[in-house]
Amino acid sequence: MKKTRLTQLLGIEYPIIQGGMVWVSDWRLAAAVSNAGGLGQIGSGSMMWDQIRENIRKVREGTSKPWGLNIPMMRPDFEDIARIGLEEGARIFTTSAGNPMKAGPLLKRSDTVIIHVVPSVKGAKKAEEAGFHAIVCEGYEAGGHNGMDENCTISLVPQVVDAVTIPVAAAGGIADGRGILAALALGADGVQMGTRFVATVECPAHENFKQKLVEAVDTGTLITGRKMNMLRSLRNEFTLRMAEAERKGASVEELLSIIGEENDRAEMGMVRGDVQEGVLEAGQSAGLVHEIPSVAELFKKLDAEYERALAGLM
Amino acid sequence: MKKTRLTQLLGIEYPIIQGGMVWVSDWRLAAAVSNAGGLGQIGSGSMMWDQIRENIRKVREGTSKPWGLNIPMMRPDFEDIARIGLEEGARIFTTSAGNPMKAGPLLKRSDTVIIHVVPSVKGAKKAEEAGFHAIVCEGYEAGGHNGMDENCTISLVPQVVDAVTIPVAAAGGIADGRGILAALALGADGVQMGTRFVATVECPAHENFKQKLVEAVDTGTLITGRKMNMLRSLRNEFTLRMAEAERKGASVEELLSIIGEENDRAEMGMVRGDVQEGVLEAGQSAGLVHEIPSVAELFKKLDAEYERALAGLM
Image 1 (cartoon, rainbow over the protein chains, first blue to last red):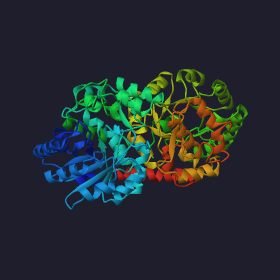
Image 2 (spheres, rainbow over the protein chains, first blue to last red):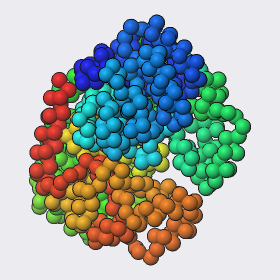
Image 3 (tube, rainbow over the protein chains, first blue to last red):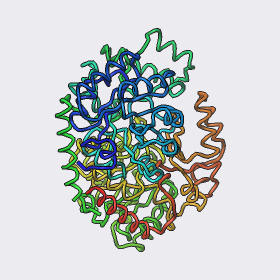
Image 4 (cartoon, each protein chain N blue to C red):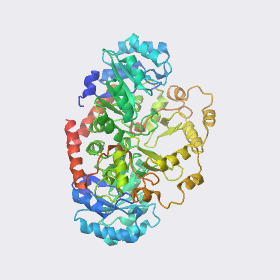
């Protein structure tokens, strides 16, 4: 696989970042990805402060290679998470779902690398202006929360590449070596993948969730919450119930009553394994996931697929 | 640019099909694209029978190279259009927005090449089963009517490539040489582009529409009509009014009253040039369109961009 400005910036072998997914991105997955030559990430979104400290301490034992900490800025305590990260020795940060002008000054130091996740050209320019070193440019295909503008990866990436001078990693819809090569063809310096990494041996996601990813076809995901908090996840009984109510014009109050008292439907699905009543955050690339390899095996596979696709272009 | 199974099947130089867009795909554009080495197409969607005959007669005078006729199966008279096409000497057909099992038997002869446009893996398999020679696999990014499943190009294309043995052209979100290379990296044998061809000298679209495409940014399009007939077009006063009503839960009757008595909002925008009250069908790739070249200039540009992107992968 090609060395790029992103591999150079991060000190990694492959231009592949593991997304800092909520609930399922612990130190084990991060260490496995970093050891395999990508950038593993701890996803702090679902973690209490002591869990963040613990995960950072463990990932530092688990790998001597670079790793990152993802901080979703929708967390009201994101400044505290940034402080904890820096205290515990995190030096690569990705921030998402928020204003890069707030995150940049907090995290930028001579010894840190900071990357912001954006869904648009405007967001990318703002992140560059805020001093970020690189951008993850995430399309509508991606799992979890995504941009209201619904910009899709294949046309968004080249526009972002044209708009900024810093390296760009493409995210959304990518799960194999062909997708990685396509991202580089579009002018990106690498990719970020989330869904693909959930279906690995080392990921702490519930086995039922992993199995659902393997079973998912091209039409396996849907968007819910256009009125509240837009989210892509696998079709199941709960999300189809939500989508049906939305189609009928349900109010936010009605939707909240469908969600009910269950504290966190994502934790229910992704960690506890209730694949019908929980939320299983996943991107459209789920349709490309057909097995649950170890992270090391996955990297070998991605590399082979990439080289085969490249040879196919000659 | 690479020769592929698609260039071989169609007898063309570049693996590029011009989409048979409603209102703006006449014989002039088709002849220009075919003469430049792609597959030009007459879009019959908006044409009366005599116009179809006239356009076919003229395209045959305008080029000696292969060209195609697109038949949207939502037209109740699509069987008549197929008959007229065959009578007048069309030998390459693309069919869209309908059941390939109905279109295949109608158009397949020893001297025809037939291609079906699909938004999903299921549709692709069905088209192959119906005897089609190739598939255009169109993502949610594309302009005009698109699939309810919202499958995006970068993850849909490799899934379709894996599901069928016939050649696949990727469509949706592609407007430059980087996108064409990305499509081939994903395993496609070529691309279909629509929006990019509207902003050319030879396209009969109104100059105001072409100018709006040049001005469009990444967030320049939106989806309307999820309840009726889903369509991607440029944001303007009319489509934003529709979107706002939909957001508020407007009924189909209320939406029809917003559309009003204007017979065809697409013709109003795309042909008559009312860029605020008409509908300007366009895909997300509008954000990649920055100029209005001749078709011959465009092919030179696409080829140069492709070769530059390919060199960048080395």
